[in-house]
Length: 347
Image (cartoon, rainbow, N blue to C red; front, top):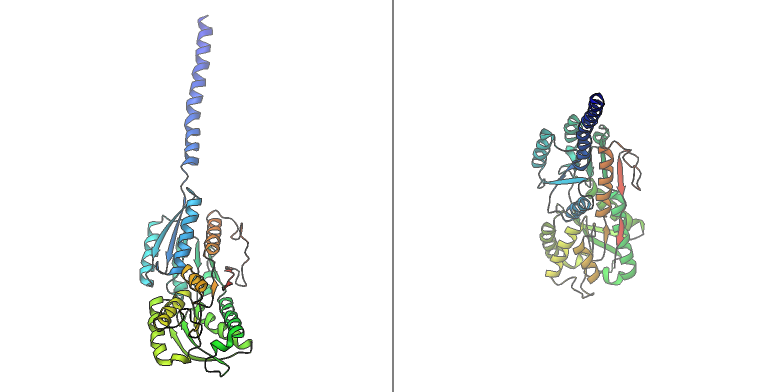
């Protein structure tokens, strides 16, 4: 009897010991699943106060809300200063507490230096929006990609908007009746690839449609509304009624131009005193001006689509998946760049 009781007790003890040994493992496994850390994404922006970039940032924040616990974005303001952006990048790489870098370069000429630095830390990186001058530097790192647009397409669409405006309302636009579109160009930056392409192809498209053009001047306004406003005021005093069109590389500069025009009585609703103005980005303020008839048109640069593409490709890199998995895009001829298409925005 005693032997039987001892046998039962030993079996019970072994079962308890097994459960005790098993339970912590299960608890640890469960804990790892529940407490899985979100992917940490550092987003280095060329400047926080850029209107289009602000829209992209807002879409990243919305993605984080929709994927709670899965991803965590941190944003760093480059303040249009490459040294400041470099300092942020150096700190992030030193801390080794980031899973993915999203880089909106201040100076697109610094691509090689920045990529080499990131390559040493073996962290995946997506450059976006501002076209790298040295695309070969991006290609040199297997965990580096670019998500942007086709700047040529933006210029072409701007040109088409102006061609349509000229063909539909030439009498009002061609103030001096010389059959030539006199224009001023508000350029973002001299050496910026997007600015150069938008400038070139907007005019080329107009000329290809059989419309002659005459450039009164090109004014570099660094993508800024206030700079474009000041420049346009000065140009109005210089050229006055000679200006028949204002072509801006982005909407911020187009809006600045309209503010200057309205100050001097233009583009306030009187069709006899109006100058056609086009931009790029389709930011809300520009859309509002177009609906009111104060601005001719713009080109949609799709901020939600850009943010979604960057996020999807970035998470694929973090989880060692194929970069384009889950996207609707293909790489261009470089093999590492995705191009988000533009669309016209007119009344």
